Image (cartoon, rainbow, N blue to C red; front, side):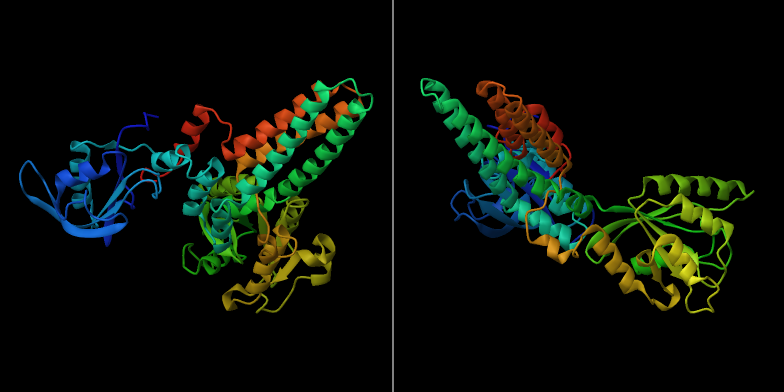
Length: 462
């Protein structure tokens, strides 16, 4: 990224397109000077910080009025970036927004790079790296629960926990150094080894407790890839439409109507599902349908959760049994649909095949059984339900999970080294490695390449 120490940056911070307002954000030492050159109204250099001021944007070269605006002035350090920030609130629309941005860029600012506002907040010490990543998680949150987890991380709960761990490690490392410096006492090495072992075991327990939340956290952050499968005309598209509360998929009585894979996100009991409505899996001579069936099989392999629909109004077919066999051992819920019609499926026989807890009876046309389906999905991935899983810090970020695992491995090496009677000064190398891995989560230790890679994933105006 370009130098962030002296230049002033600008970008549109609202979604591109028509809307009530658009916001052009400016940050840097010259933010007020740049805005003053194109703003007609109160003297922005003299107005109080954290005020919003009415006026107009004028093109200085032509003297023409561009838009009627409200301009927010926020002076350092009490701003998002810890720099002077000006936000120009103009009428929403592509033309006015872009003209104002071009004027800002013409009079002293440069275009911000993706995530550069948040990067400056990190570099200026306002937030740490894990909180920076939580900003993007908050923007991308798909359910209330995933938003709550992102807010918890943005508030610094994870950061505080990690820093406590690092402080405890640093304390024991300092004590080890003191003990190594006074080797004349006979019991020193034995005491040091015992202390290292106890502290390593304690910290490892705390890290592993965090890692236990990783699977659930990842579900909330990224959603569950959920494949809706079944033979043709069992109600797959009807289920998709019911969960989405809209007619996204075509529903007919003609088998084989769904020819492709349809993907949508939906919130089910606080769990974000990436729903994949697949073509009915069966043998077919239809070329187009055959392609859809192959794609369905691939979606089945990649799914985190499988919703397997079976028509209760017909006896189990060979295709049903093949799908039951193909999904055995996977995370699945068998949905016995069309219970509003006379049942021909042997329920006891089906439960014997898949287990009594794995079957949900529904009539999708009557919306029967949908609450039970939502509860089952929630308890499958959150042992006591999703609400009870929100009380503690949850790890959601793949980068954090990887670093915690490396820290855990380093502690395992510490304990192995102690068990093998390795010298204390060698064992402490692995303890130091654990401390460094944890530091990468919060950004207390990082490489510039990491920052560039992380912030490049952000929105342009964030």
